[in-house]
Image 1 (cartoon, one colour):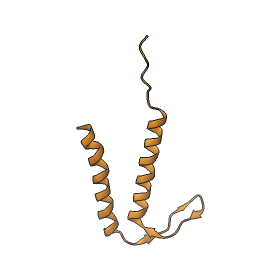
Image 2 (image 1 turned 90 degrees about the vertical axis):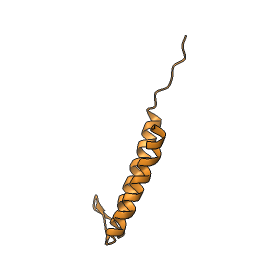
Image 3 (image 1 turned 120 degrees about the vertical axis):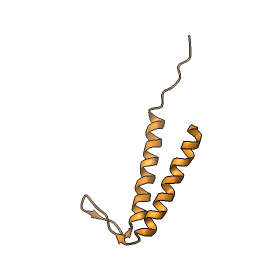
Length: 72
């Protein structure tokens, strides 16, 4: 069941982003800390944010993974 969820959740998020990007094709520029980016569709920005979040989560889970201790 867990393996199914690991595959299904990113797939559903990808489908949702695809539908969202088709409906919102207007290019927007993002300004963060006085830096303005190039104009991209909203769906692309959401996909980038989702990808960065998933990558960051994977890195943090790898760093803080509990190591199994060997029994004495």
